[in-house]
Length: 181
Image (tube, rainbow, N blue to C red; front, top):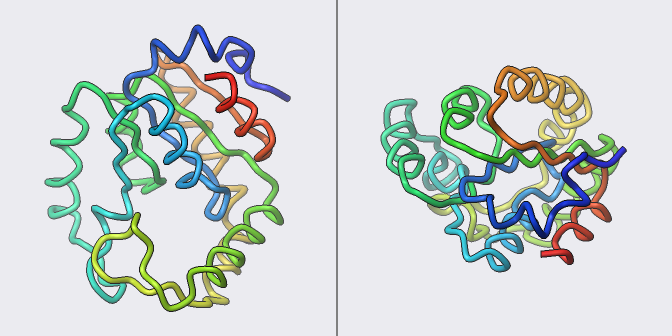
């Protein structure tokens, strides 16, 4: 099922100034966000960059919030990442939400592929030095939690009536959208 806004992407793109990209872990949100930022010239903010410090230590809630709020107050941005706790706040600032609602097997494959291709290296979308690793616990969490997490995203987004929502069910739809911009 395509989002009703999917076929209006060219017209719609000019109205996208504050975009949230959320969805299952391993779905390709970050890769898509980078491409969307390149196409739209909107500044890109990775929540993982604000959250993670060296060696997978995370920021406190206060530290994270103090980094996030100034970004939200800017006029234009793309914010990539989930961070359920701050989603209600981010929804107050955005005009568009893009949801990656992919099958969990596809997300799991994406996460495993990312771990292997970046093994031992810290990705540029991460804060501090966080070398990629193979994590069975992370993969299990994807398998168990991605569906519930996405349902929670739908529930939170549906409580806002002044935002545009684009839903992708697979990477082909996401790539097709990018081609129309």
